[in-house]
Length: 467
Image 1: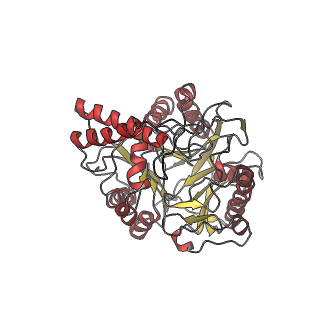
Image 2 (image 1 turned 90 degrees about the vertical axis):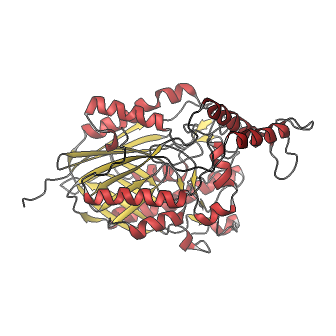
Image 3 (image 1 turned 30 degrees about the vertical axis):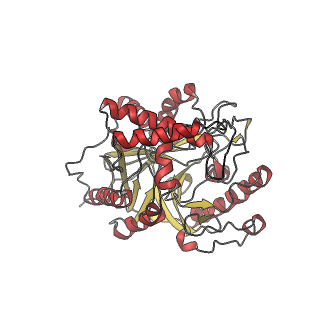
Protein backbone atom coordinates (compact mmCIF):
# COMPACT_ATOMS: atom_id res chain seq x y z
CA UNK A 1 0.00 0.00 0.00
CA UNK A 2 1.21 3.52 -0.77
CA UNK A 3 1.74 6.26 1.74
CA UNK A 4 -1.60 7.91 2.64
CA UNK A 5 -2.21 11.33 1.15
CA UNK A 6 -1.48 14.33 3.32
CA UNK A 7 -4.41 15.78 5.19
CA UNK A 8 -5.54 19.30 4.36
CA UNK A 9 -7.33 21.62 6.75
CA UNK A 10 -8.84 25.08 6.57
CA UNK A 11 -10.57 27.49 8.92
CA UNK A 12 -13.14 30.26 8.55
CA UNK A 13 -14.89 32.61 10.92
CA UNK A 14 -17.94 34.86 10.47
CA UNK A 15 -19.40 37.34 12.96
CA UNK A 16 -22.99 36.36 13.85
CA UNK A 17 -23.55 38.91 16.63
CA UNK A 18 -27.15 40.21 16.57
CA UNK A 19 -27.98 43.89 16.83
CA UNK A 20 -28.37 45.26 20.32
CA UNK A 21 -31.99 45.19 21.46
CA UNK A 22 -32.90 41.65 20.40
CA UNK A 23 -34.28 39.43 23.14
CA UNK A 24 -31.85 36.96 24.65
CA UNK A 25 -32.83 33.30 24.97
CA UNK A 26 -32.75 31.41 28.24
CA UNK A 27 -33.49 31.36 31.98
CA UNK A 28 -37.27 31.10 31.79
CA UNK A 29 -40.50 31.97 30.08
CA UNK A 30 -41.23 35.48 28.78
CA UNK A 31 -38.36 37.15 30.65
CA UNK A 32 -38.18 40.04 28.14
CA UNK A 33 -34.37 40.04 28.33
CA UNK A 34 -33.71 42.65 25.67
CA UNK A 35 -29.98 42.98 25.13
CA UNK A 36 -28.40 46.28 26.18
CA UNK A 37 -24.85 45.82 24.86
CA UNK A 38 -22.23 43.47 23.44
CA UNK A 39 -19.79 42.05 25.97
CA UNK A 40 -18.26 39.58 23.51
CA UNK A 41 -19.14 39.05 19.88
CA UNK A 42 -20.75 35.81 18.70
CA UNK A 43 -19.11 33.76 15.95
CA UNK A 44 -19.71 30.93 13.54
CA UNK A 45 -16.36 29.17 13.29
CA UNK A 46 -15.72 26.46 10.71
CA UNK A 47 -13.08 23.78 10.25
CA UNK A 48 -12.76 21.88 6.96
CA UNK A 49 -10.79 18.62 6.73
CA UNK A 50 -9.88 16.91 3.47
CA UNK A 51 -8.28 13.48 3.21
CA UNK A 52 -8.24 10.90 0.45
CA UNK A 53 -10.72 12.75 -1.74
CA UNK A 54 -13.29 13.19 1.06
CA UNK A 55 -14.07 16.50 2.72
CA UNK A 56 -15.98 17.28 5.91
CA UNK A 57 -16.84 20.61 7.51
CA UNK A 58 -17.68 21.20 11.16
CA UNK A 59 -19.19 24.56 12.09
CA UNK A 60 -19.34 25.71 15.71
CA UNK A 61 -21.78 28.50 16.57
CA UNK A 62 -22.06 30.70 19.66
CA UNK A 63 -25.81 30.11 19.76
CA UNK A 64 -28.34 28.43 22.04
CA UNK A 65 -29.14 25.99 19.24
CA UNK A 66 -30.48 25.90 15.71
CA UNK A 67 -33.42 24.30 13.98
CA UNK A 68 -33.18 21.58 11.40
CA UNK A 69 -34.53 24.04 8.83
CA UNK A 70 -31.48 26.28 9.32
CA UNK A 71 -29.21 23.25 8.90
CA UNK A 72 -30.96 22.29 5.66
CA UNK A 73 -30.46 25.79 4.27
CA UNK A 74 -26.76 25.85 5.17
CA UNK A 75 -26.23 22.45 3.59
CA UNK A 76 -28.14 23.40 0.47
CA UNK A 77 -25.96 26.47 0.02
CA UNK A 78 -22.75 24.41 0.44
CA UNK A 79 -24.01 21.71 -1.92
CA UNK A 80 -24.70 24.39 -4.51
CA UNK A 81 -21.44 26.30 -4.12
CA UNK A 82 -18.94 23.59 -3.09
CA UNK A 83 -20.54 20.31 -4.13
CA UNK A 84 -20.57 18.98 -0.57
CA UNK A 85 -23.03 16.26 0.37
CA UNK A 86 -25.34 17.32 3.20
CA UNK A 87 -23.99 14.75 5.63
CA UNK A 88 -20.48 16.17 5.19
CA UNK A 89 -21.56 19.34 7.03
CA UNK A 90 -22.04 19.23 10.81
CA UNK A 91 -23.30 22.29 12.71
CA UNK A 92 -22.95 22.37 16.48
CA UNK A 93 -23.86 25.03 19.04
CA UNK A 94 -22.49 25.96 22.46
CA UNK A 95 -25.96 26.64 23.95
CA UNK A 96 -25.19 30.14 25.20
CA UNK A 97 -28.03 31.84 27.09
CA UNK A 98 -26.75 35.28 26.12
CA UNK A 99 -27.60 35.19 22.44
CA UNK A 100 -30.80 35.30 20.36
CA UNK A 101 -33.51 32.65 20.17
CA UNK A 102 -32.47 30.54 17.17
CA UNK A 103 -34.10 27.30 18.34
CA UNK A 104 -37.65 26.00 18.73
CA UNK A 105 -38.12 27.40 22.23
CA UNK A 106 -41.59 28.81 22.97
CA UNK A 107 -41.53 31.90 25.20
CA UNK A 108 -37.78 31.71 25.76
CA UNK A 109 -37.12 35.08 24.13
CA UNK A 110 -38.96 36.38 21.09
CA UNK A 111 -37.13 35.36 17.89
CA UNK A 112 -35.70 38.23 15.85
CA UNK A 113 -36.98 37.28 12.41
CA UNK A 114 -34.53 39.31 10.29
CA UNK A 115 -31.69 37.66 12.20
CA UNK A 116 -33.10 34.17 11.74
CA UNK A 117 -33.87 34.69 8.06
CA UNK A 118 -30.28 35.66 7.26
CA UNK A 119 -28.41 33.42 9.72
CA UNK A 120 -27.92 30.48 7.37
CA UNK A 121 -26.03 32.63 4.89
CA UNK A 122 -23.52 33.71 7.53
CA UNK A 123 -23.05 30.17 8.85
CA UNK A 124 -22.48 28.92 5.32
CA UNK A 125 -20.04 31.79 4.81
CA UNK A 126 -17.81 30.49 7.60
CA UNK A 127 -17.74 27.07 5.92
CA UNK A 128 -17.00 28.60 2.51
CA UNK A 129 -14.03 30.47 4.01
CA UNK A 130 -12.74 27.26 5.60
CA UNK A 131 -12.96 25.38 2.30
CA UNK A 132 -11.07 28.17 0.53
CA UNK A 133 -8.38 27.94 3.22
CA UNK A 134 -7.64 24.20 2.72
CA UNK A 135 -3.89 23.59 2.95
CA UNK A 136 -1.56 20.77 3.98
CA UNK A 137 -1.83 20.25 7.72
CA UNK A 138 -1.17 17.94 10.64
CA UNK A 139 -3.63 16.99 13.38
CA UNK A 140 -2.48 16.80 16.98
CA UNK A 141 -4.59 15.64 19.92
CA UNK A 142 -4.48 15.86 23.70
CA UNK A 143 -6.78 14.95 26.55
CA UNK A 144 -5.96 17.13 29.54
CA UNK A 145 -7.39 17.72 33.03
CA UNK A 146 -10.14 20.33 33.12
CA UNK A 147 -11.07 20.82 36.78
CA UNK A 148 -13.27 23.31 38.53
CA UNK A 149 -15.86 23.88 35.79
CA UNK A 150 -19.05 21.90 36.44
CA UNK A 151 -21.15 19.96 38.90
CA UNK A 152 -23.96 17.51 38.26
CA UNK A 153 -27.24 19.26 38.96
CA UNK A 154 -29.25 16.02 38.96
CA UNK A 155 -27.10 13.94 41.33
CA UNK A 156 -24.95 16.50 43.19
CA UNK A 157 -27.48 19.19 43.93
CA UNK A 158 -25.79 21.17 46.68
CA UNK A 159 -24.74 24.53 45.17
CA UNK A 160 -21.53 25.57 46.95
CA UNK A 161 -21.13 29.17 48.18
CA UNK A 162 -19.77 31.61 45.63
CA UNK A 163 -16.54 32.36 47.53
CA UNK A 164 -15.85 28.62 47.66
CA UNK A 165 -16.31 27.85 43.96
CA UNK A 166 -14.24 30.86 42.92
CA UNK A 167 -11.18 29.54 44.75
CA UNK A 168 -8.58 28.31 42.27
CA UNK A 169 -8.55 24.81 43.83
CA UNK A 170 -12.34 24.20 43.93
CA UNK A 171 -13.57 20.75 42.89
CA UNK A 172 -17.13 19.36 42.82
CA UNK A 173 -18.06 16.87 45.52
CA UNK A 174 -18.69 14.21 42.86
CA UNK A 175 -16.35 14.90 39.93
CA UNK A 176 -17.06 11.46 38.48
CA UNK A 177 -20.55 12.71 37.54
CA UNK A 178 -19.06 15.40 35.29
CA UNK A 179 -16.42 15.71 32.61
CA UNK A 180 -13.03 16.00 34.30
CA UNK A 181 -10.95 16.29 31.13
CA UNK A 182 -11.24 18.17 27.86
CA UNK A 183 -10.09 17.04 24.42
CA UNK A 184 -8.09 19.43 22.30
CA UNK A 185 -7.59 19.04 18.55
CA UNK A 186 -4.80 21.23 17.17
CA UNK A 187 -4.21 21.79 13.47
CA UNK A 188 -0.63 22.69 12.55
CA UNK A 189 0.96 23.71 9.27
CA UNK A 190 3.86 21.55 7.96
CA UNK A 191 6.29 24.05 9.50
CA UNK A 192 4.72 23.46 12.94
CA UNK A 193 2.79 26.73 13.15
CA UNK A 194 -0.64 26.48 14.80
CA UNK A 195 -3.41 27.24 12.30
CA UNK A 196 -6.51 26.42 14.31
CA UNK A 197 -7.94 24.28 17.09
CA UNK A 198 -11.07 22.69 18.47
CA UNK A 199 -11.90 21.78 22.05
CA UNK A 200 -14.48 19.36 23.42
CA UNK A 201 -16.01 19.47 26.91
CA UNK A 202 -19.41 18.72 28.41
CA UNK A 203 -20.93 21.32 30.74
CA UNK A 204 -23.97 23.58 30.50
CA UNK A 205 -22.20 26.77 29.38
CA UNK A 206 -24.17 29.27 31.44
CA UNK A 207 -22.46 31.20 34.25
CA UNK A 208 -24.67 34.29 34.25
CA UNK A 209 -28.20 34.93 35.48
CA UNK A 210 -31.56 36.13 34.18
CA UNK A 211 -30.70 39.72 35.12
CA UNK A 212 -27.72 39.88 32.76
CA UNK A 213 -28.55 41.40 29.39
CA UNK A 214 -25.22 41.61 27.60
CA UNK A 215 -24.55 39.56 24.46
CA UNK A 216 -21.74 37.02 24.83
CA UNK A 217 -20.94 33.36 24.19
CA UNK A 218 -20.90 32.28 27.86
CA UNK A 219 -17.72 30.73 29.22
CA UNK A 220 -16.90 28.56 26.13
CA UNK A 221 -17.14 31.55 23.81
CA UNK A 222 -15.16 33.81 26.14
CA UNK A 223 -12.44 31.17 26.68
CA UNK A 224 -12.14 30.34 22.98
CA UNK A 225 -11.75 34.02 22.17
CA UNK A 226 -9.04 34.38 24.82
CA UNK A 227 -6.98 31.56 23.33
CA UNK A 228 -7.53 32.79 19.76
CA UNK A 229 -5.96 36.09 20.79
CA UNK A 230 -2.80 34.25 21.88
CA UNK A 231 -2.05 33.61 18.21
CA UNK A 232 -2.15 35.60 15.00
CA UNK A 233 -5.01 34.60 12.71
CA UNK A 234 -5.92 31.38 14.53
CA UNK A 235 -9.54 30.19 14.70
CA UNK A 236 -10.86 27.98 17.52
CA UNK A 237 -14.03 25.87 17.66
CA UNK A 238 -15.91 24.59 20.70
CA UNK A 239 -17.66 21.20 20.63
CA UNK A 240 -20.33 20.93 23.34
CA UNK A 241 -20.33 17.51 25.00
CA UNK A 242 -22.87 15.76 27.24
CA UNK A 243 -24.12 18.62 29.40
CA UNK A 244 -27.79 17.95 30.08
CA UNK A 245 -27.26 17.27 33.79
CA UNK A 246 -24.07 19.29 34.40
CA UNK A 247 -24.21 22.96 35.36
CA UNK A 248 -21.26 25.30 35.56
CA UNK A 249 -20.12 25.81 39.14
CA UNK A 250 -21.64 29.31 39.16
CA UNK A 251 -25.09 30.06 37.83
CA UNK A 252 -28.13 32.16 38.84
CA UNK A 253 -26.09 34.51 41.05
CA UNK A 254 -26.68 38.31 41.04
CA UNK A 255 -25.52 40.19 37.97
CA UNK A 256 -22.20 41.58 39.21
CA UNK A 257 -21.17 38.28 40.78
CA UNK A 258 -22.19 36.47 37.58
CA UNK A 259 -20.11 38.69 35.32
CA UNK A 260 -17.09 38.30 37.61
CA UNK A 261 -17.52 34.54 37.69
CA UNK A 262 -17.86 34.43 33.89
CA UNK A 263 -14.28 35.58 33.46
CA UNK A 264 -13.00 33.27 36.20
CA UNK A 265 -14.68 30.14 34.83
CA UNK A 266 -13.70 31.07 31.27
CA UNK A 267 -10.14 31.52 32.49
CA UNK A 268 -10.15 28.00 33.93
CA UNK A 269 -11.29 26.54 30.65
CA UNK A 270 -8.82 28.64 28.66
CA UNK A 271 -6.02 27.35 30.90
CA UNK A 272 -6.99 23.74 30.17
CA UNK A 273 -7.22 24.56 26.46
CA UNK A 274 -3.74 26.11 26.46
CA UNK A 275 -2.36 23.06 28.26
CA UNK A 276 -3.92 20.86 25.60
CA UNK A 277 -2.38 22.86 22.79
CA UNK A 278 1.03 22.58 24.47
CA UNK A 279 0.72 18.82 25.08
CA UNK A 280 -1.01 17.72 21.86
CA UNK A 281 0.72 14.92 19.99
CA UNK A 282 0.55 14.13 16.24
CA UNK A 283 -2.29 11.86 15.11
CA UNK A 284 -2.40 9.97 11.82
CA UNK A 285 -5.51 10.83 9.82
CA UNK A 286 -5.81 8.07 7.25
CA UNK A 287 -9.37 8.97 6.28
CA UNK A 288 -12.35 11.15 6.98
CA UNK A 289 -15.96 10.02 6.75
CA UNK A 290 -19.44 11.37 7.53
CA UNK A 291 -22.75 9.61 8.11
CA UNK A 292 -26.11 11.12 9.05
CA UNK A 293 -29.31 9.20 9.79
CA UNK A 294 -32.83 10.52 9.95
CA UNK A 295 -34.33 9.45 13.27
CA UNK A 296 -37.79 9.37 14.80
CA UNK A 297 -37.52 9.03 18.57
CA UNK A 298 -40.61 7.55 20.21
CA UNK A 299 -42.84 9.77 22.31
CA UNK A 300 -45.24 9.20 25.16
CA UNK A 301 -48.68 7.99 24.05
CA UNK A 302 -50.53 11.27 24.20
CA UNK A 303 -53.50 10.99 21.86
CA UNK A 304 -55.88 13.80 20.91
CA UNK A 305 -58.07 13.17 23.96
CA UNK A 306 -55.06 13.42 26.29
CA UNK A 307 -53.83 16.61 24.62
CA UNK A 308 -57.24 18.27 24.82
CA UNK A 309 -57.48 17.36 28.51
CA UNK A 310 -54.06 18.84 29.28
CA UNK A 311 -54.93 21.97 27.32
CA UNK A 312 -58.20 22.37 29.20
CA UNK A 313 -56.35 22.15 32.52
CA UNK A 314 -53.76 24.74 31.51
CA UNK A 315 -56.36 27.14 30.10
CA UNK A 316 -58.36 26.85 33.31
CA UNK A 317 -55.31 27.98 35.30
CA UNK A 318 -54.82 30.96 33.01
CA UNK A 319 -58.51 31.82 33.45
CA UNK A 320 -58.20 31.89 37.26
CA UNK A 321 -59.55 35.25 38.58
CA UNK A 322 -56.16 36.07 40.13
CA UNK A 323 -54.09 35.16 37.07
CA UNK A 324 -52.01 37.92 35.49
CA UNK A 325 -48.85 38.13 33.45
CA UNK A 326 -46.80 39.08 36.55
CA UNK A 327 -48.39 36.73 39.09
CA UNK A 328 -46.86 33.64 40.67
CA UNK A 329 -49.77 32.31 42.69
CA UNK A 330 -47.79 29.70 44.62
CA UNK A 331 -44.33 28.11 44.60
CA UNK A 332 -45.10 25.90 41.61
CA UNK A 333 -47.52 27.89 39.50
CA UNK A 334 -45.97 30.47 37.19
CA UNK A 335 -48.45 32.09 34.82
CA UNK A 336 -45.81 32.73 32.17
CA UNK A 337 -44.78 29.08 32.18
CA UNK A 338 -48.41 28.02 32.01
CA UNK A 339 -48.71 30.18 28.90
CA UNK A 340 -45.88 28.21 27.29
CA UNK A 341 -47.83 25.01 27.91
CA UNK A 342 -51.01 26.47 26.46
CA UNK A 343 -49.26 27.62 23.29
CA UNK A 344 -47.54 24.27 22.86
CA UNK A 345 -50.67 22.23 23.54
CA UNK A 346 -52.83 24.31 21.20
CA UNK A 347 -50.35 23.64 18.41
CA UNK A 348 -50.16 19.92 19.23
CA UNK A 349 -53.98 19.67 19.26
CA UNK A 350 -54.15 21.42 15.89
CA UNK A 351 -51.53 19.08 14.44
CA UNK A 352 -53.36 16.03 15.79
CA UNK A 353 -56.66 17.26 14.36
CA UNK A 354 -55.04 17.69 10.94
CA UNK A 355 -53.56 14.21 11.15
CA UNK A 356 -49.98 15.49 11.24
CA UNK A 357 -47.33 13.39 12.94
CA UNK A 358 -46.64 14.05 16.60
CA UNK A 359 -43.30 12.25 16.34
CA UNK A 360 -41.26 14.55 14.09
CA UNK A 361 -38.01 13.39 12.57
CA UNK A 362 -34.61 14.70 13.53
CA UNK A 363 -31.14 13.25 12.90
CA UNK A 364 -28.03 11.81 14.45
CA UNK A 365 -24.73 12.60 12.82
CA UNK A 366 -21.21 11.23 12.92
CA UNK A 367 -17.92 12.44 11.49
CA UNK A 368 -14.75 10.37 11.65
CA UNK A 369 -11.36 12.12 11.51
CA UNK A 370 -8.83 9.30 11.73
CA UNK A 371 -9.16 7.82 15.25
CA UNK A 372 -11.54 10.57 16.43
CA UNK A 373 -15.31 10.10 16.12
CA UNK A 374 -17.61 13.08 16.55
CA UNK A 375 -20.96 11.51 17.49
CA UNK A 376 -23.62 14.20 17.51
CA UNK A 377 -27.30 14.49 18.30
CA UNK A 378 -29.67 17.45 18.73
CA UNK A 379 -30.23 16.73 22.45
CA UNK A 380 -28.94 18.10 25.72
CA UNK A 381 -27.44 14.74 26.50
CA UNK A 382 -26.97 13.38 30.01
CA UNK A 383 -23.62 12.02 31.19
CA UNK A 384 -24.85 8.42 31.64
CA UNK A 385 -25.82 8.26 27.96
CA UNK A 386 -22.39 9.51 26.94
CA UNK A 387 -20.75 6.94 29.21
CA UNK A 388 -22.76 4.11 27.63
CA UNK A 389 -21.73 5.22 24.14
CA UNK A 390 -18.07 5.63 25.04
CA UNK A 391 -17.94 2.20 26.65
CA UNK A 392 -19.08 0.47 23.45
CA UNK A 393 -17.60 2.76 20.78
CA UNK A 394 -15.13 1.39 18.25
CA UNK A 395 -13.30 4.72 17.97
CA UNK A 396 -10.19 5.46 19.97
CA UNK A 397 -11.56 8.84 20.97
CA UNK A 398 -15.37 8.99 20.74
CA UNK A 399 -16.66 12.50 21.44
CA UNK A 400 -20.39 12.50 22.20
CA UNK A 401 -21.72 15.94 21.25
CA UNK A 402 -24.91 17.86 22.06
CA UNK A 403 -26.79 20.47 19.98
CA UNK A 404 -25.79 19.08 16.60
CA UNK A 405 -27.82 20.04 13.48
CA UNK A 406 -31.08 20.59 15.41
CA UNK A 407 -32.46 21.36 18.91
CA UNK A 408 -35.02 19.00 20.40
CA UNK A 409 -34.64 19.31 24.18
CA UNK A 410 -33.12 17.00 26.76
CA UNK A 411 -32.03 13.38 26.53
CA UNK A 412 -32.30 12.42 30.22
CA UNK A 413 -30.92 9.15 31.49
CA UNK A 414 -33.33 6.46 32.71
CA UNK A 415 -33.12 7.47 36.37
CA UNK A 416 -33.88 11.12 35.69
CA UNK A 417 -36.62 10.21 33.21
CA UNK A 418 -38.33 8.00 35.77
CA UNK A 419 -38.56 10.95 38.15
CA UNK A 420 -40.17 13.20 35.54
CA UNK A 421 -39.88 16.93 35.98
CA UNK A 422 -38.11 19.63 34.01
CA UNK A 423 -35.82 17.68 31.68
CA UNK A 424 -38.21 14.80 31.02
CA UNK A 425 -41.62 16.46 30.84
CA UNK A 426 -41.37 20.25 30.75
CA UNK A 427 -38.66 20.99 28.18
CA UNK A 428 -40.30 18.95 25.38
CA UNK A 429 -43.35 21.19 25.71
CA UNK A 430 -41.10 24.28 25.70
CA UNK A 431 -39.88 22.93 22.35
CA UNK A 432 -43.50 22.39 21.25
CA UNK A 433 -43.37 18.59 21.36
CA UNK A 434 -44.55 15.60 23.39
CA UNK A 435 -42.10 14.10 25.96
CA UNK A 436 -39.93 11.19 24.89
CA UNK A 437 -40.71 7.60 25.82
CA UNK A 438 -37.22 6.03 26.15
CA UNK A 439 -34.64 8.40 24.73
CA UNK A 440 -31.78 6.88 26.73
CA UNK A 441 -32.06 3.48 25.04
CA UNK A 442 -32.86 4.86 21.60
CA UNK A 443 -30.12 7.50 21.52
CA UNK A 444 -27.38 5.13 22.70
CA UNK A 445 -28.41 2.62 20.03
CA UNK A 446 -28.49 5.30 17.32
CA UNK A 447 -25.08 6.76 18.16
CA UNK A 448 -23.49 3.33 18.37
CA UNK A 449 -25.00 2.44 15.01
CA UNK A 450 -23.41 5.59 13.54
CA UNK A 451 -20.14 4.73 15.27
CA UNK A 452 -20.15 1.23 13.82
CA UNK A 453 -20.82 2.48 10.31
CA UNK A 454 -18.04 5.04 10.58
CA UNK A 455 -15.68 2.28 11.72
CA UNK A 456 -16.62 0.22 8.64
CA UNK A 457 -16.39 3.35 6.49
CA UNK A 458 -18.78 1.97 3.91
CA UNK A 459 -21.91 3.84 4.98
CA UNK A 460 -24.02 0.74 4.32
CA UNK A 461 -27.41 0.31 5.96
CA UNK A 462 -30.95 1.00 4.93
CA UNK A 463 -31.30 4.12 7.07
CA UNK A 464 -32.25 7.37 5.40
CA UNK A 465 -29.47 9.91 5.08
CA UNK A 466 -30.15 13.57 5.64
CA UNK A 467 -29.33 16.08 2.96
